Image 1 (cartoon, rainbow, N blue to C red):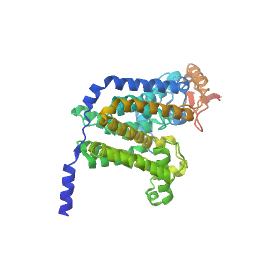
Image 2: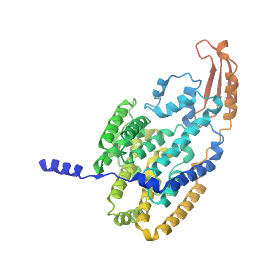
Image 3: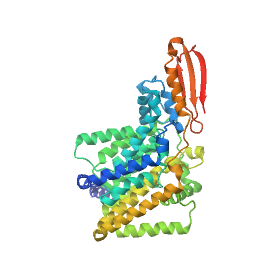
Image 4: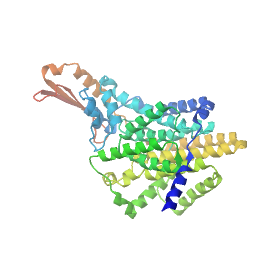
Length: 446
């Protein structure tokens, strides 16, 4: 027993410090970092302009947020509402604040806040210090935000920021520890807030445990976040956990098949066979052999691998899969993002090692990535477009007009609704909502 404890202590003390030399990377690549993010924003806006220019209350933006907060009648404490059984403080805070804005601009602000968070998430990875080659720094925002890894517009709704917030949280945890105590405290508090943003915050647990085993330098912060995550887990009112799924062969097979088809092949293949598995091995084994002396790279790759595999646990180890009976893009976000991040990180290491061919490799990689992005977008227009909610402008105008009728003074109300996404629709109750008020009109815009 003493030998085991001694070996464990020796291992913990011998862990490598997580050091990325972030300041040097930023100072040497300021222009490239800015250009990459600017190009990302331009392409994102151009790609989904049809939806951005005609904002609406898509998916659950209407039922869970607009309908609940419309009229600015909720107190700040209402951001702790949890209709699905779990807290989602960030989304509710945004909806609470947007409810104070003129009705005509509320769907616009839902999208604007979502766009900003998506850009911040991509920027957080660019400024993490993991990537150092200027070629990869320039192209990584496009790859992470505009390739087969996600349905970009799908996530630029307030509803799906519950996933993007956790993705941003995990990227922040990848940053090296700052010398500023104030900055470290700020990051801890921000991370703690983000944890209270949906069931996928449980991914903090495998991340923190793996990081603590592999690296030293952030133990106290990560242990603190583990406690916060544990508190969040106990706050979930409707338990959906089904750990027994770990022992069900059909669940494990589905888990593995999803990793191969939707993650490693980014959705371009819909089946698993020996050839595909051999191809994955033919890529990964030589890669790890070539970079075997890069300890930081190997440990970070292992950390990415843990996130990729465990990211499906909130779906496959819960009742959610029984409910959905399908795998949606939001369930793939974390695995696909970190798989692409791993590929970029690996390419960065190879380019930096091959100094003689640095420029040729970098240029060639940008060309290949550009072809992939164009091809992927050509095949999958649903990744950046949704059917326009054409009734939204009429709905907003009708609500605005009703607001100017001073219905509260007359003890009257009108109910105005509009077509939403699927079973969800935006509904505004304008006027006196107290018991006994007279309903004078119902309007529905198709």
